[in-house]
Image (cartoon, rainbow, N blue to C red):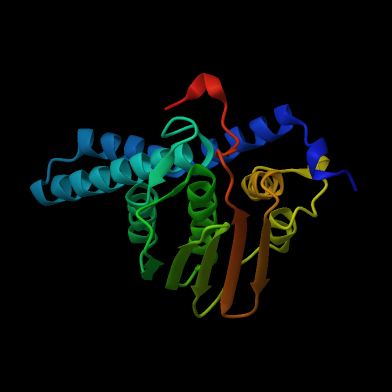
Length: 230
């Protein structure tokens, strides 16, 4: 198996773009369908329903774009901390859109490194995807002098977790076999490896537990393309 440091950056970028397009297709498609229905609909109640669907689709689209900006982009500049309120707000919106998901927080830090914010966002998103029948999502972060620990626990009637994502998170996936589904997890493994950290997962019928340990560094080394600082 190829080493994680042998990842083809062009392949990784293309698979991340594929994931973005996949995730945006549904809400943007709903916007298009809603506008078409609105153009033909005359009944006031149905028109109001169309407006509600358009509002929901627009909110979901905005939340997903904010997620990709924070989870994979260079938001917040370089060498800076990110206010914990930013990733929390994105996760809260995604959880509300997922429906039937209760979100619980165990976070005292006012800010975290950009690397930690990326890990937090991606693990929470993986947890939400796993809760196909709803449930609870617990997100916790502890910032110590030497390291930042992140724990995400998804619990519900059924957990849908692709073992390949677990392999990617643990840095055990061949980079040549990346897909749009596993690329975000592989990126997290690269980020953790670059800081000397570790990501672990455990899944059973009703629970998915994911944990990350990121050693604190003098300057954040998040994987950010400098030409797109946001």
